[in-house]
Image 1 (cartoon, rainbow, N blue to C red):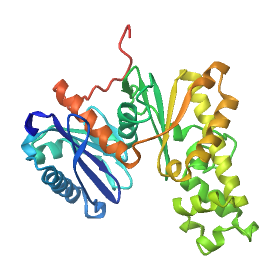
Image 2: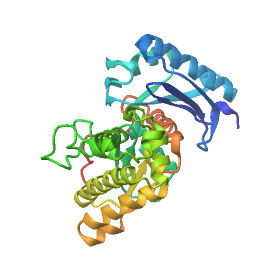
Image 3: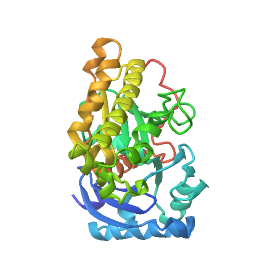
Image 4: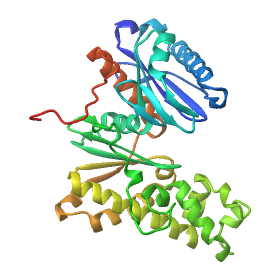
Length: 338
């Protein structure tokens, strides 16, 4: 069978600093891969040009022509208007109301799909990674912030406002001061860095003084992992609190939706590994209701950095098969009788 008949699609993971491109074949293998700088500071049109060049470079790596690509899916860190493919707000990209789908369709002459980055990653894991045996799933990505996505009855669920799954904005401490009320503000890398900064002066023996020269703003994922593995008292306590709050938030969502699977990924999860997941799981089991919901499986993601790229590619393939890349099986409510 020729490559032109293999339902080739391209997945693109668009980040504020870097972009990843992959040509994905009918067996869901990445057969051509490149990366490039986003260069968001140079403006929307410049990034469009970088995306076009990245698509062509990925095609070159896969030894196919752009015309042989059925569809292109982009996973973008930001709020997306799903039906129109407009990026409503993407702070890291400096975009507001950016007509990404239509502008790229004009440039690339291929069907283009635009999806939120975490939704794309959750879909990739659901179809190809840790969620392959799941019925319904909540995805939770822990990194700079905390993003989420929902898969219900085999489809990404968006809700009428196309914002479903934003677990990071779950209010977990309603009486706390601003900046410490939501699970994202406590349990993300940004939240944990803030908590450490507030207490660092009272812990002169904390390893962070050496790792970041007493500058909390330099605390990143690598520093958190090093201190956590060394069981530094301050850092271990902050991470434990963050994991507990995240576990409680997940328990609330599973209690409401009776989900059988939660997929947990993102840079913090991947760096801290199984001990971190065990902390989240313990808090989840302590608070989920009823007891039978403790059978919900909390799983570490498997696709890591490829989750968003592959998820966007799969969604693009489905949209092309449906003949409507502007919809990609999005739905605002569950179909009647299903």
